[in-house]
Length: 235
Image (cartoon, rainbow, N blue to C red):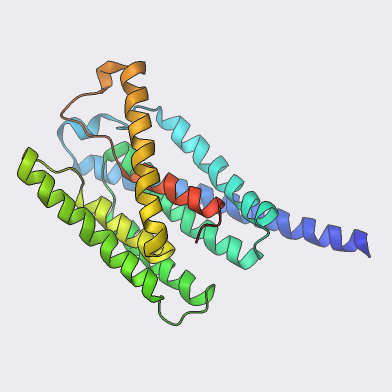
């Protein structure tokens, strides 16, 4: 009896990992197509390559590993039901696509952000059992967009340029709809800390890439900080 239960659990885990691997491959190809399309539309500095100063092959290779490891963590460490784990992996896949595209182009495509918002709403409906997103999540979406835009307006008055793109504000709104207002503050703090560490490390490793006319995309750090909350089951 114990052996049968073990084999059943092993079979379910294997299917989960196979689905995650296929999803990662599909998301990766989708991100590559979006990146190619955006690069064809861009001119100048942003069209020259990865703005994160990392080889593109690293990003693509680690994307699949990252998503599969997340699936393993959700199932084996957090012991979430397979349905919730798969729903979480699906949201993370779209977040990962946004991170890949932003890292290479500095652009967060509206269609991916919209898809993320729809998935966040579906997660709230199917997994959390809310017909409509809870008030905390609606506030997270609203303030996730409004506060960065207000910060950007103030920064523009002082420095005559933008600190954040509208894409970052839209991404924060989508993340806020998924994680809620309380966790959104943690997302912002962790992402800012990661960006600071990356920037300092980049200056020490290769000062030539720290050019004033090319900003570092913030999207990948928002995705990593959201992922940190996911693996800590913080929302």
